[in-house]
Length: 217
Ligand code: AP5
Image 1: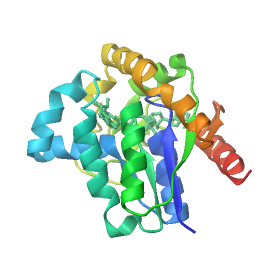
Image 2 (image 1 turned 180 degrees about the vertical axis):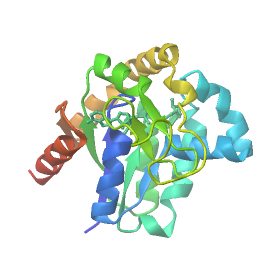
Image 3 (image 1 turned 135 degrees about the vertical axis):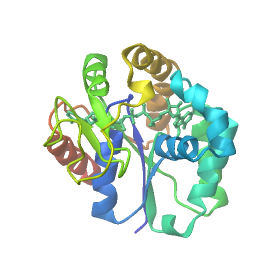
Image 4 (image 1 turned 45 degrees about the horizontal axis):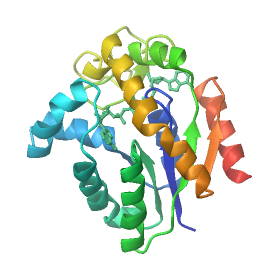
């Protein structure tokens, strides 16, 4: 069975955290557009140069650019048995584009799963998120601290870093952009009968259980 899931939810909802586990469980790729763009910035590619300032201020990259990035990624062979999209679609035009991309590739429509988290919790989680510049592992100073302060548990070199867009003033802008441009996707997916949601504010393990339960209903 092909399984294709779109994870919705505000910044810091835990989309990346849950997608990583589900991707290992179901053996399908976790496609994070945010990670792909950050990698493009790190590598200094043309795409990276185009998107760096936009990302740093918490704005959205253009639909046209994102649609091309996702179309290219979904065309790859590892997406045959399904995929988990994290961070795309983020606007109604991107949702329409996704439908067209999937049709064009002969793939089934997606199921959307929204992780609902209040803004106050988002602020807490994102301002305390840190990640390893070596392996990319994500930590949280409040909820999932590293064993030794500032150092990756897996012994990678370099200190744990804060994302530029996780500074408090940028988080507020990302939340504003989310409510304005991304939250309408909830109704969009409800209208096409492809929406499910969880509103558990608990540990990642508790959220995972809620996701498995709602997806099996
Ligand atoms: P992106 O990387 O997609 O950012 P985001 O959607 O804002 O999501 P985050 O990665 O911040 O949060 P998350 O929900 O994955 O949470 P996580 O699991 O890490 O996008 C970045 C930028 O790229 C955008 O602003 C935009 O500029 C651009 N972009 C990307 N896609 C685009 C698109 N389609 N169109 C246009 N522009 C695009 O968890 C957060 C923290 O909380 C972690 O520290 C984690 O350990 C902790 N945590 C997770 N779950 C829990 C829990 N249950 N309890 C306590 N702590 C938890």
